[in-house]
Length: 381
Image (tube, rainbow, N blue to C red; front, side, top):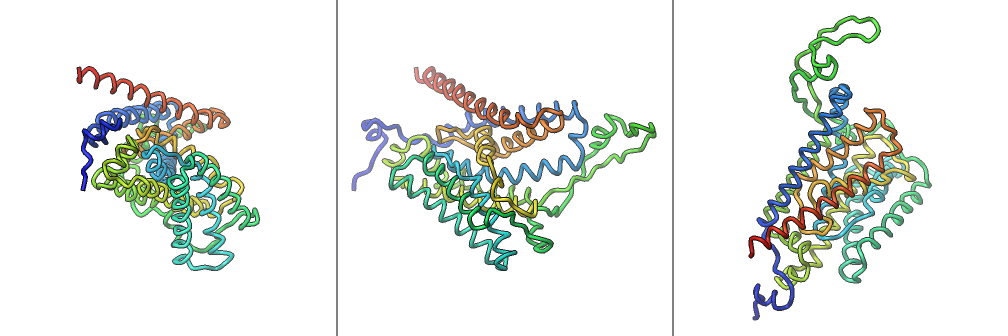
């Protein structure tokens, strides 16, 4: 039995997979950069509009960050392999429309409808992976076709009609709208309502109202689900051999294959995880608003997911990424959207902001890559 060595890999013109430890400094710099940017945007928005720090607004930000974060983690799995998934928004629409249709129209029990939809999404991811690995189709083409196919399926099954849950299914909706716990934040109301004062002044009467020193922030259930998924994804990527396989696949597919990694299987796994998380996120989105319109439900959600992953340190070249970066990147995207509304900026430029953010992330990724390559040359010399 022959053993492929590092020397053999170099002789064939392929570099061996880089150890995960070599990726840490670069990823850490990206994550820290996103953290400071998030802090700056949050502080700037709070200073310009104190209502940014109202408990209701912060709770909504946490909820939206969690929902989009679930999609972004799925997108990160695909991006880390060097691929892309443009069908995330349509999978969200398919799951979001099918769940109320199965529950309210077909009268399926939730215990059956939810697993069936997750199984369908698993098959979608499996189909993507097989088309990409076995037929060697480009991920862009495969998932672009999926974008059209799944939304068209949702519109066809629902008859292009809004699907809703009605007044029932409260226990199921709790997964999206429930708040199982609250955390105290001192002096938050003094900043948001009193403008750094323990008193709020009525704008018309001038009457002063004493503000409570402690504000309780409800933690939405989706945030706890998001944290559980994020922890599991982080352990998978950093503490298991399969996570290292995904990293190696993204860095150098040929070298990973020569090292004994089943690259086709790992690619399929990445697309399956992405589709399943998109389905789960789609169900939560639908449960939050209590209905889904197949025409526009989930539109452009893939852009938010990809932008958050790229901002969080996932390189579009593949092979780099950290889940904590996805959390920060998703939060930054949602804070930017919230800042646009809070500061009176026309909402029409929201997608322009998203496009600029993605472009900045790609440019930063290239600059960091070139800087790291130059440092390695200096050290090697």
